[in-house]
Image (tube, rainbow, N blue to C red):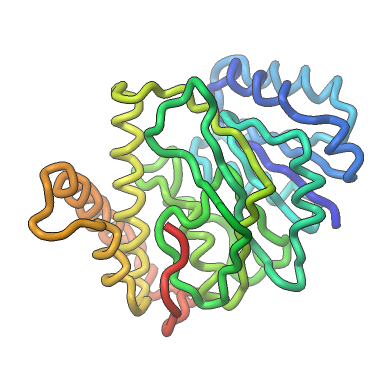
Length: 302
C-alpha cells in the first residue's frame, strides 16, 4: 500500500523549511512513500523553500499551488496530485516521528478501517492551548458513529483514496483561511456517517510545534477559532438533519449549571459561528447533505 503525505502551507517559509528538515527520508524511501507539497497562495519565500527541497529530496516529491487561500482548498488540490492508495495529511508546523510511514503502513488495515487519525503531541516550546491529541490505546470508530469535535484532527489524518470517491473532498467553506476551522472533523464525520469505519492509532505520531506561548494573544485567538469551528461543525450537522447533533453539542460544554463565565463565552462563540455557518448554507441553497446519514450511533472521541 503506497502512502502519500500531503502538507499544505501558507506564508510560513521558515516554518516549512524546519518541518521538511525533520522528515525522515530513509523511512519514506524504505516504505515507497511520496510527498505532495501545496503552496496555498503564499507571497513570501515559500516557493523557493519548496523548490530547494524538491531538488534534493531522495524520495518522490510533487508540488503545486492554489491561488486562493484556505487549507481545505489546498488539501483538495493535494489529493488530485497524490498517487498513493492511502493519503495522509499533516501541517507545516508538525514534525513526523522518524518511523511515521513505517508505523502507519504496518498499523493501518484497510479491511478494518478506511480513515483515521494518529497521536499529536506538543513540542517543548509550545503552550498547552490546543492542537494536541492523545491516544492511550488503539481505538476503532464503528461506522455511523457521530463524532465529537476534535475526535480526528487534520494534523495527523489519513484516508483511503477510495473514500473520497464516495464522500467527496474537503468542504472548502471550512478550515483555516475561512471563519470556520473545522474541515477535518466535518470530513471525518461524513466518512463515518457514510458507513466507513475509522481507527485511532497511538503509534502513528507527529509533534505539533505551534510555538504559541500560553496566554499569548495568538494562543487566545487560536482557542477562539476552535470555538468557532466547533459551533460550525455541530450547526452543520443540525442543518443536515443529523439525529443527536443537538445533544452532542450540549455535552461539549462538560459543565454543570450555571455555566461559569469562560464556558459561557466559549458557548457564545460557538453559537455565533454556528448561526453564521447556517446562513452560509442557506445562501448557497445546499439543502440536506445526502452524505449525512440519519440514525447515527453514539459519540466517539473528545
